[in-house]
Image 1 (cartoon, rainbow, N blue to C red):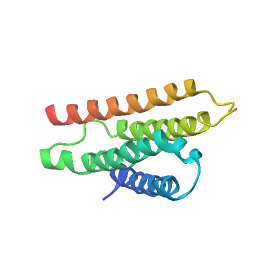
Image 2: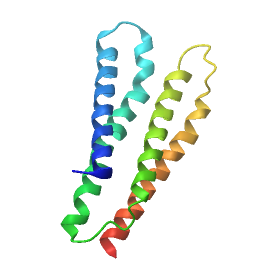
Image 3: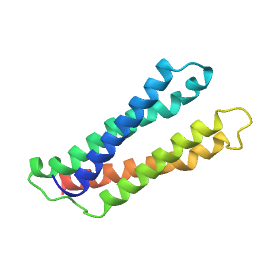
Image 4: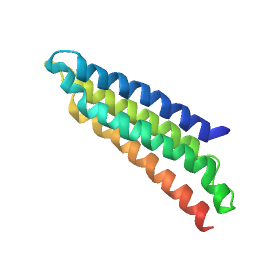
Amino acid sequence: MEGIGRLFFAASLFYLAVGTAMGFAMAFLRGKWTLRLMPAHAHINFFGWISMLIFGFAYSYLPTFAGKTLYSATLPYIHFICSNIGLIGMAGMWIGSRFPNSPVSPKLVWPFGALVILSVWLFIFNIAMTLFQ
């Protein structure tokens, strides 16, 4: 496996490790502070681990299975950058904004969420154009 698929698989494994560590902290460490990790933990596991794994699989194998070439070789790299910046930003803002007297506002989550949405739309567009060209 090469290229963008490998990057998405590597990111997926990274987020699996981070999500598992957060889950461990939430389960076994004491204090209400661990509950503040919940939104970040959920997104790191679902978008970070599972979605990145699916993106890597789709970019690596869907064009081959369909007997076509990927519509754009550049869009997956933009997708990768936007999705990772978006996810890390969202998780960071959720964690930072959930502590008392934090200077981080929960309103800072939305720009990073918009990056995640943009990245998913790039994926949908590129795969759809690949399959239906």
